[in-house]
Length: 69
Image: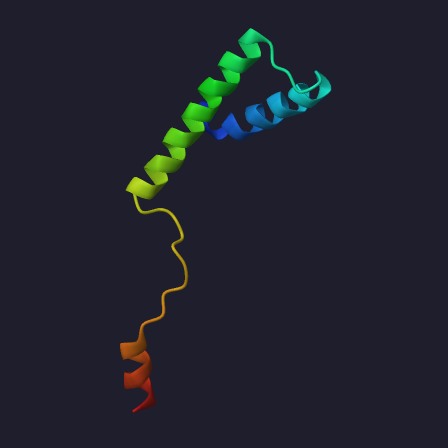
């Protein structure tokens, strides 16, 4: 579980290194970045599957009409 929590921090670190290296990755860095990116995508997909994502304000008109009466 701890590995998935640190994915964003590792991605941010790799992006900083990428900027310092004139916007180029070494082969190892590119493989690591792609692996971390895939892990992040899987984690976000699991949030959608488990309905743990905010989908916007929920406005129910029926309840509003009942409250006014």
